[in-house]
Length: 66
Image (cartoon, rainbow, N blue to C red; front, side):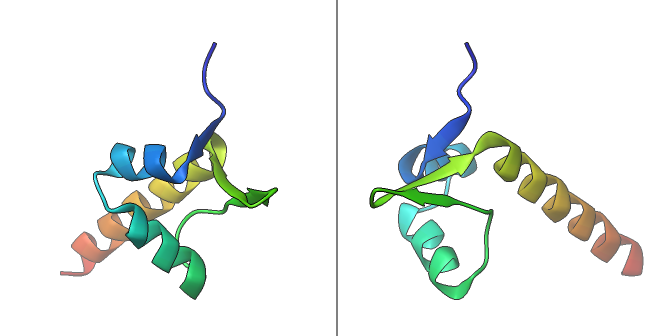
């Protein structure tokens, strides 16, 4: 069965970034959509993948401009 959600530590490991980066992004309103349930922050896989696609599209667009 495929996981449908990631916690902060799992997403940080997936992207090889610090969990604190995700905390900062949440605080400034950046990064992927997340849910906060009972004090726990979770990221749905579909939201993570949508954020990745958007980042890829933005990077490709920037590359075309240069």
